Length: 79
Image 1 (cartoon, rainbow, N blue to C red):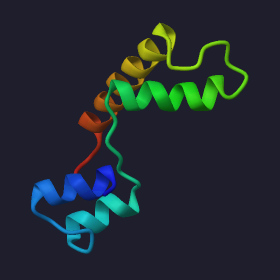
Image 2: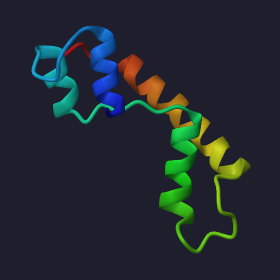
Image 3: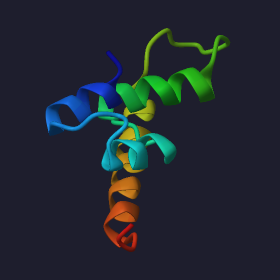
């Protein structure tokens, strides 16, 4: 089960409901520090990285991105 599917299930809605479709169409995803730092590591450090797992810089960037996303979501007009 994907994170989005788990979120929808926990909210008591399905992917084909109005809210579910809205989330799927917009590519809504869940991210915590661990998931985001791993994504940053995979994308920006890649296979040539000198470290095999996310480092402190990756974690700091993850937290900064999550904070920025949170601020963006707070300023979006209602759908």
